[in-house]
Length: 224
Image (tube, rainbow, N blue to C red):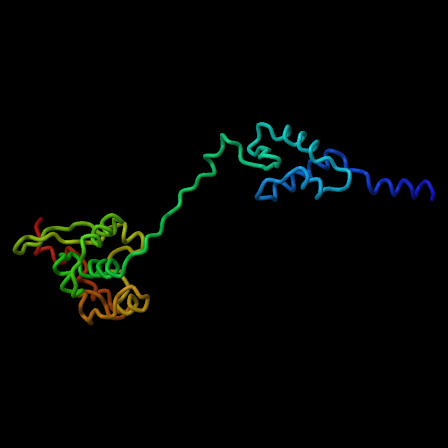
């Protein structure tokens, strides 16, 4: 065996420089969701590498940085610096699914506002639970309107600006037609045609058909 061949053979088993070993350890830990042990690091790195020594240098290099090298039992992991943990917090929006009763009640209010509870129940054919109305009020999609100038002066309900903003509407006149709501499953098919005055049967009906949804158009029936 020549000297050149012997040197080449030795270089195949020579450990990489410590700086390169640091990079290897860094890459492994960065890509690992779970802590990695020293023995596992050594098994992944080239023959002759010393993961423990590389970790010492790497940990020192990450001191004071946004990401730190932490020991968990006999394993190591890269984590966000403790004092920067607040940056990782995220607010999530909880999706609340409306019940069929709430959807129908909301639709009746939107298309027949201002409307009383008794009128909602007459249109739906069933009573309206307090919980259904409370949920819509809590979501700020409906609010109390003026009291109707009829015996008992019952309170009315109307949709809010929050409701219009959520659905990208400029006004209640821009609400979809009855067929669109039924096709989307947002309105029960048992509601008879004409049950919601002001609601167009087709999406392309004239805007004049929606005049009944404006509270001001019925202002003579309510208190100032």
